[in-house]
Image 1 (cartoon, rainbow, N blue to C red):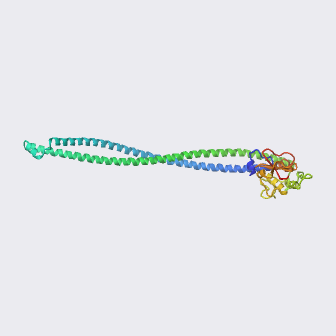
Image 2 (spheres, rainbow, N blue to C red):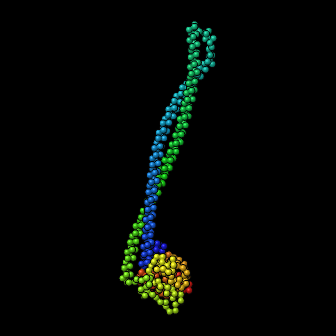
Amino acid sequence: MVAVVLLGSGLTSSSAGDLQSQIAAGKSAATSLKSQIAADSAQIRQTTHGLADANQRLSKLQQQLSAREAQLRDVQNRLLAARNRLVDLENQLERATRALAANLVADYEHGQPNLVSVILDAHGFTQLVEQVNFMHRIAEQNARTVSWTRATRAAVARETRLLATLEHRDQTLTAQVLTQRNNVAALQSALLRQQITELRARGRDATKLHALNARLVSLEAKAAAQAARAAATRNVNVGGVAVDTGGMVQAPAGAPAAVAQVIAAGNAIATLPYVYGGGHASFHADGYDCSGSVSYALAAAGLVSSPMVSGAFESWGDPGPGRWITIYANAGHVWMEVAGWRFDTVALAEGGTRWSRGGGEFGGFVVRHPPGL
């Protein structure tokens, strides 16, 4: 938890324990990034499949649309021809109507000859027959013209209505296909944008992973160098018992009992190894991290009742430095000064014990102290 925050923050210490914590956190982050990259790749494949499906649907709809547009053009051509025929028929009807009207006017003005008049005016039987036949032919022709034009007009009207219905239906279907094509095209565009976003996200994750791997290489090299230095100085522990008794300190004369108790507890774990999270599940552990170490020492004097994380010490106690004990804390690390001694996991890597004289990080830390101390 603490190491994840510290990684790459510039506030990490150089202790072996802290480095191991950073390395573990870095490997965990790398695993997480790899999982995220795998998830990004799976999502990209899914998006690509969706894009291919959208293209297939678009192609099919485009074929349907082309066929429907061809049908519509055929219907429109038929409708145009029918309208032309209708115009011709209406022109013929108009001419026939004018002719019929002229006959009616002539009959009205000159009087319609009846059979008696025709017989009286005829000069012989042959002329009589011719005039009677002529009258019948005129009447029949007029009747046929009226009947034919009416029937033709009705037929063309029916055909016009039928073609208009077909045209409306095809226009409706064409509009539906166009709408579907536009919807699929919009889906295609959205999938393309999503694919671009996913590719960029995977690229960013891959860049982070590359940088993290480089950071891990650097940290592991630093940890190996520190391990070599520690082996050279023979600052080792056997079964959790400090071999280097020089790692212990004594409380000064006149120090309050609480200070002596904190120092004694600090001596008990001064050379134990750094263990990330150590001292938080229980005060009794095989190793301690920075906040676990400080919590253990303060608990011996009854100043804390349970292990605390480093960030919690930012608001613990009273503000400012204390006379005997001063806490330096931020979200990623905590250490303390006790009677002039520095108690810090960073010092463990430097000298094989958490106790040292001088040093310590001050910038970016909140300064607190136990009330009265």
